[in-house]
Structure formats: C-alpha cells, structure tokens
Image (cartoon, rainbow, N blue to C red; front, side, top):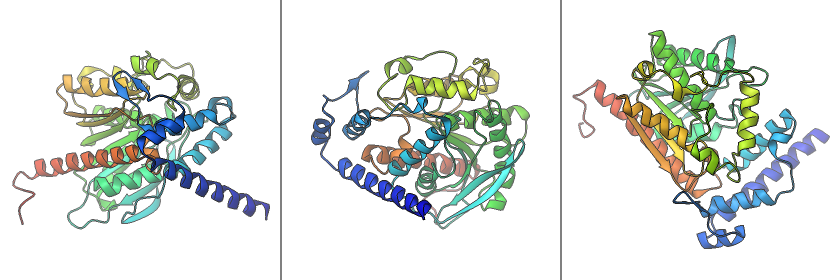
Length: 372
C-alpha cells in the first residue's frame, strides 16, 4: 500500500511539474526574463533563450545540494526525475520493442524504434545515451529516440551500455563497439536498410558513437555510413574556452563534469583517443564516416564538439556543423518544457533525415526525389 502511495505521489509530482514547466514555457519572452529576476544573459556574443534562463533561475532557487555531492544512487534517481519532467509527451512512432544486443561481455538491453512511414526500408541509427558515462538508461532517452525516429525517418536502436563506476573505462567503449557491430550485421533482420546504418548519441553517448565508429573503421570490417553527434564530449585532457566560460550556471557545470570523469576513467591517461576522440590519429580520422555535429551555444562542451567537426573537415571528411547559440547542454531532453529546445531537436532530426536520404541517392544515382 505504501509503495502504491509513493508511486502515486511521484506520478502526481511529475504531472504537476510538467504542467508548470509547460505553462512557464508559453509565457512571452519578456515575462520569462522578468520572472528570472535577472537581466538577459549575454555571453560570447550569444543571448540565452529566455525560457531556459527562467528554468535555470528556478533551479538556482531550489534549496537542495548539488547533484555531485549526493550518493550515486540518489544522483541517478534525481536524473530520472528531472528528465521525466523535461522530456514531455513522447512523440508517436510506428512501433517500439525491447530486445537485447551483443555487448563486450554479454547481452545488453536495447530498444528499437521504427518509423510509421511507407516506402523503402528506412535507415538505422544505433544510439548511445548521454549521462556522463554514469547516468541514464533506455527510459531517460526514450523521448529523444522517439523524436529522432519520427522526424529523422529512421529506425533507432537505443543501447543500454554498462555504466561507471561499476564498469569504468573502457567498458562502455567496448560495449559500444560490440553493439555497433551487432547493428551493422542485424540491420536487415530489424527491417532496416543494411546499406544505411548510422551511429549516434548525445554528450557522453556521442563520445562513444564517435569512438566506436573509428574502432569499426580501424578493424577493417563493416562501418557506419554516418555519425550523428549531439553536443559530443571529445576532449578530456585540456580545458577548452567554452568549459571556462560556462563552468557554472548552465546545468552542466565544472564540478559535475569532473565528477563524471573521476568515476568513468579514474587514473586513466586522458590523452587516450578513446577518451578524447579529438586526439585520434589523423590517418584514422581521414577514414571516418561523414558527421552531423550539433552543439549548443551555452554548453561547456561546445568548443570541443565544434573542434571535432572542424578537424574532420580539415582531413577531407564531410561534416555538417550546426550550433544553436541560445541553448544549453542536454536540449534533446528538454523538448517538453522548452520551445527553443523542441524546435532545435526537430530541426536537427530533419538534418539527419536529409543526410541519410543523400546517402540513399548516392547509392542509386538514377533515383530522383521527383520521380514516380
């Protein structure tokens, strides 16, 4: 009885929190800034989205200790609660089913999202969730995966890799590579186009996606045709300018990133390119898959993500780079409570769709979008 009561209270809190967040998100920009009790936030030639400014100001006023000072399980619970509110209503897709995929040391839980669109077999995106290699699971990223499936026109295979500190580096990397291999060989069985298998993720998951893509290339076997990297972590050894600029006050702060690093790779050599993929050898990077790199203007990880895209370009690898200057880290998980985050996420998924469609046309030069 008490368990049911607790569950009911949590559901009620989530409903109220989501409703309040949506209400505040609908206010005019001026009202949002006024309610934040601050002047508009302008840094590095960018202005923070007013709705996000208000949300951050509300978080600042909440009398609770920083996440990184809580016990690990409490941090994970708080992360789940937070995204349950900010993710909002899941986008409808054709079908969703749970399954298992290969991991480095045994099966891993996974979830397959399939689009509700007619036509030829759709591509497959093997997706790794963010959370600093320590937090997150299939449920925390259910909404982002649904959005990418619906607006990206692709199957999405979300993989629940092993987390630190129980499984420190390189466990997550090894799982990511094993899961990517599984996706590459199983695409047709999943109803996807085996010639258009992409890999992607957000934040820490984008790091794993980029590293796994390069490892697959280095092995000489099947490799993804595209990497979709949302605000990726690519440099753990040196502090970038954006890490200094946005060290505090923009959700992902320096203390939190340090806390993640200490749990994921304690004592590791942070120049290892499997941690800092920006440091991968140029000869290997030249063989990388084309990339879509999406960054946020007020994100500590902004500069390293953009540096990765620029490095790929300098080596002749096609890379589409899109910065959303008014947003903060993690906006894929804020589509239910931030108009700007929702619009950016849908637009990014549209870019993913366009790039995957280009791959289909390149494979069949005679195919034309206007043909019958």
